[in-house]
Length: 318
Image (cartoon, rainbow, N blue to C red; front, top):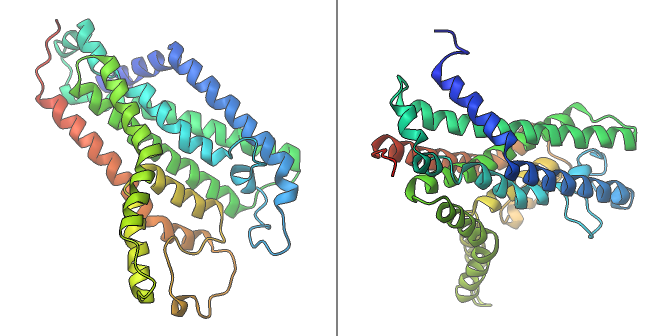
């Protein structure tokens, strides 16, 4: 059978067409593009003031397009951190339950199509849409920055931006898989959408409040030793990194700010002899590898749960 005519790719093409023609996607992509262009404008207007003589990141001018803001609007990275989950939720909250309620899912399964092709194709199609959109936005920011600044990015800056975009795709893919999982757990699309948004709001707003309360309750006394204080800080950081947005924030901060040398507390012995200079890309990737691994693991776990539930469920339209 021709690869293009394989049922998997037929479903992928159909899902991509449905996504890009839907009004919710058009509205959401419009909001994301406008906000990202707004963050680019604020970065361009304030990039001169962000360059300082004692700033070790001043040589990475192109990366500041993604991280700098004048305070009126958040930076490009913060917009992706905030709006990326909404994009994933919008593409996945009714992936299965809407088709089951309309009866199209049972008709698809009556055809000579493997059941796993459907769930895999839905995820791959949404991932292609997300990946294409983020790469277009990333290159659009680089192109506008090149025209405005007149200085091309170095090879290291280019690859740091590419790894940032890939990491953003994994971040959105986690929320996409979570929304698909809820579309399998709940019969109504509105319920799965509310559940997905509730989880997003919990990690975005309330989780940090809960961790702050725990940190205040477990705060060591003034007589505690330095190693007890470091253990306490590592414990609180570990709690914070249970949130996917914190993992994404830590990883992108290190990738786009080469001067960041560690994401945890350091002792005086560890800091002794360290030269305050930017890290090469390979070293930055080693620093963020635990965060990247955790984000990928969470994405894979959500997809595995969705896959198991879909393969075991009884498909019957009402």
